Image (cartoon, rainbow, N blue to C red; front, side, top):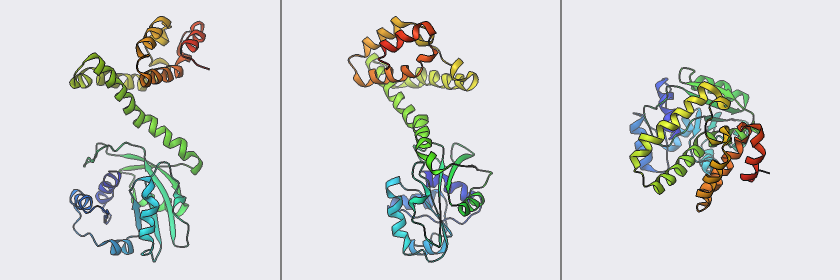
Length: 266
């Protein structure tokens, strides 16, 4: 999904593009979606291309490189799209220049043309690779920012909290909807507008002033009742408690100690 999205913009910028996938159906789909007229065989494209982009799951990056390595006979730029793994997952050699270049975005489905017109890419790797990245990933479609190797685990967590765990929170909301016997369409009609309104409030007012609800009002009894209702569902109880602890600091000062006690905040 990342490879197709990035490939769409690379091809749009008039760069020659080839694709390979060990799944022949997936490769045929990529060729069709990206409208590639001349796609050489695996060995030929490894030998001919100056830049190899590894758009695989993290655990497969090194395996994909090992398969390609025997056909790398001259200087190559190797880029992978992992937000967590460093460029140095590729072994260093005289004719290899490495980079991790990660789009800070979510790609749950293939969507061509993409929803966005421009993506932010976080680069980490060899200095020489940065110059190539800036040439290939046109500033018309991409904004490149650098990040150091030590920052990558925290950076990846940032993305996880911004997207994956937001989906998990939506899943928790749907569990409560099920208990209410609400219908699927109610999520779109009732919950999604609330989610979007909250995000817009955060953008407009900031987190401090974009918060509403029982904790910021100091309603201890309300939070206590919420916890009582959730006692029968350990997962939702833990989610509610953990997230509420994060916003205790926004409660009235005189109530913060009591909130910490009721939420088991150490």
